[in-house]
Image 1 (cartoon, rainbow, N blue to C red):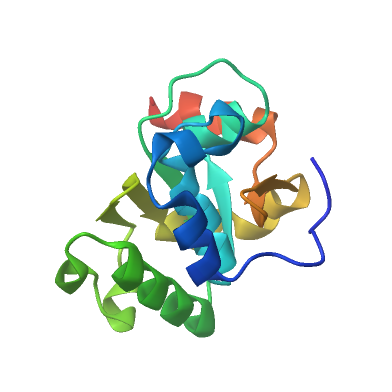
Image 2 (image 1 turned 180 degrees about the vertical axis):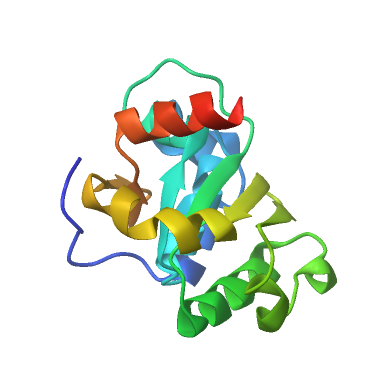
Length: 160
């Protein structure tokens, strides 16, 4: 995993670049992983976990959705909500910030695929998970990815 690149694309340029077309997805990654790249370009603070994190770590797993642990805090929840509204197929279904503070998980269906925002996990485990995470560049956006050990541990714990 690399450090944060000095010049990440803006979210708009990133969206234009990947535009949901499989041919534009770097390194043969599943299209759904591009949702994480867009969230990163939108300056949402999160940690990629689940099968997408394992795939970016080189594990041969199938990726059907993107699971992100959201860094807690009011400003980041506002950033998350705005980014999800821009990404979601049904933006009116994105909860208000005061609801995001209370939810365990919020799911957004995007043109790239489903994005599960693990809000409670962020409130409980952000600091611990962040310690062993590292950045992976996806379409010029720095995506913070959980360590493979943490991603596997979460999968075992939650049966995914």
